[in-house]
Image (tube, rainbow, N blue to C red; front, side, top):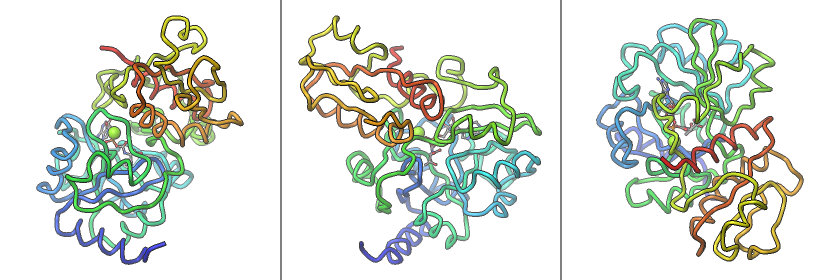
Length: 320
Ligand code: TXA
Ligand code: MG
C-alpha cells in the first residue's frame, strides 16, 4: 500500500483550503467539505447537482465534538453513541447556531455521524472542523462503495479521492430522528433494526420506508436509481414477461438458466445479508453497463440488512 499518512495529509490540506475530498466510510464514500465553510459546502451541491432542500450529514470523530455541532444531546443519543459509534448510524439532533443553514437545508436540526473507517477517523482527528458529506454520487444515482465508483462519476469535478478500499457495510447509514428520547427511523440503513432494538424501543409506526415517507428531506422515492429500469419481484415470474437475453438479474443466490451468466449477479451464495448489502450497489452499477434493457431484482428476507436492501431496491425501482 502507498504511504497512508501522506494521503491523509493531502486530504486534510485540500479540506483546509476549502476544497472537496471524497472520503471512505464503512457505509459508502462521502463527498466532504469543511462543514463551517459555506463556500466549500456550496461546492458539494454543485458537484453532485444536489438540490438545496436535501440536507447534509456532518461527520466527526468523537462524541465530545458532537456537543459543538448540536444544541442539546438527549440521554438516548448518548446510549446510542456509546453502543454504535463509530458506525453506520446518523442521529438528527438540534443544531448549534454556528452550523450553517446551508448544511441543514434550513432545518433547525443537523444529522451527525461518527464513521468507522480508520483513514477517515485519522483525517477527522487532524482537522479543526467537522466535515459535511453526502454520498459521493451524482444526485439520485447509486451511492459509491469504491474509490473507482467515485472516480468514474465525479473524478473530473473533485480534486482528491482518499482511497480506503471497498466499503465494509456497503449501504448508507441508518438515520434516526430523536425528539427528546423518542426515536423515529427516517432511513433504514447499515445498522439493522434488530441491533438498534437492543438499546432503544422502536415502534413499527415510527419506521419510515420509501413508500411511507416520500416527502421527508432527501428521501425521494426515486433515489438510488441506476439508469436502467429495475423491476422488483419474483424473477421467475417476471422472466415470463421479457426477453431473458436482454435482462440482468440480482438475487440472493438463485440463478436462472435462460439468462446469460454474465448478466446474473448473486449477492451472497451463503445467503448472508451483510455480504449482500456490501455487493448491492456494485451490482446495480455493473448491470447498468451491460447490454440489457431491464434489471430484474428479487426482494430479500425482511430481517437484518435485508430491510435496508429492500428499501434501496424499492427506491431504485420506483417509476414516478
Ligand atoms: O452512510 C451515510 O449516511 C453516508 C456517508 C457518506 O456518511 N451519507 C449519506 O448522505 O448517505 P446523503 O446525503 O446521501 O443522505 C443524507 C440524508 C438526507 O438525504 C436526509 O434524508 C437526511 O440524511 N438528513 C440529513 N440531515 C437531516 C436533517 N437535519 N433532518 C432530516 N433528515 C436529514
Ligand atoms: Mg445519497
